[in-house]
Length: 312
Image 1 (tube, helix red, strand yellow):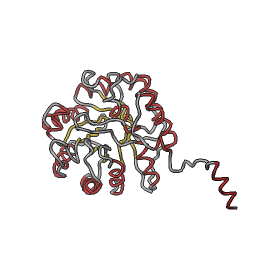
Image 2 (cartoon, one colour):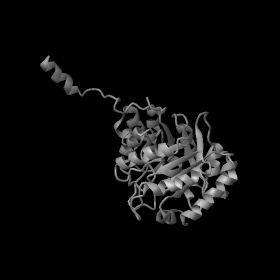
Image 3 (cartoon, rainbow, N blue to C red):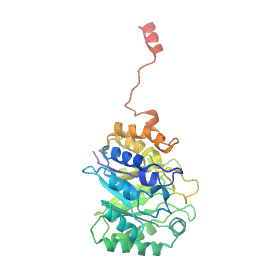
Image 4 (cartoon, rainbow, N blue to C red):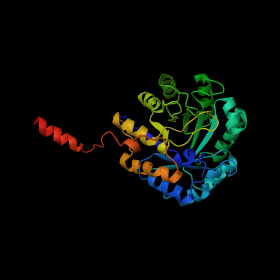
């Protein structure tokens, strides 16, 4: 049975574009509850400026108050050296650095060319000097709505540059929801051959309804780490029409049904998923929290007993 590891990103990637501020107490409580569901990692928050992402202006307080559970890594997004210094003080277990393989998307999202982003992230990696494990998330690896499909050679070229800097892991993101299963399968096969010593994570969005199909395609190629967002919250503000990340509980339910070992206590996670609309103040896209697991059976309708008796 293949083991897969899930990283929960709802309190960072999911919350960051919510229109109403999620109270700090709610964030801390949610992270603490997620910590008991079996996740490998939880991306708690982002050490960006409060002006850029006001939703996550309480990063230090959240990191200082969460209850850390053994076996769970608490990772944070770090944009630059100043963010890295703040994250280090907050005892983050891993830094997640982000840039795009698409020049246009990088300019829109990070307000700078790719080479400048790379230089800033290289400085963070050098400053840490192996004190904290580094993961690099490469955005728009499967396509950019302004530039079109992302050439695999371009994705590999940027991945190579970070691998040479000694990062622990690379995340390949379908930021704009343009991936499809055969494309995912081809890239994942190449990634596993090229980077056997790195943690490889896939991060899918469900913008065009192919998110779970892409997860399965990646898993079938041996990828064993995935990002997901509770309820399917999140999305890229610079991807026109983009909806949220893949829904964690839906993806985990699918993989468990397919025979993969996820380490996730799904029933416990579904309780949190059903509470999420009350936290954010609106409905969320997730399906399994609404319909129940396929193993959750229902009592038969009363009329069935009457029909049975007539045919006995």
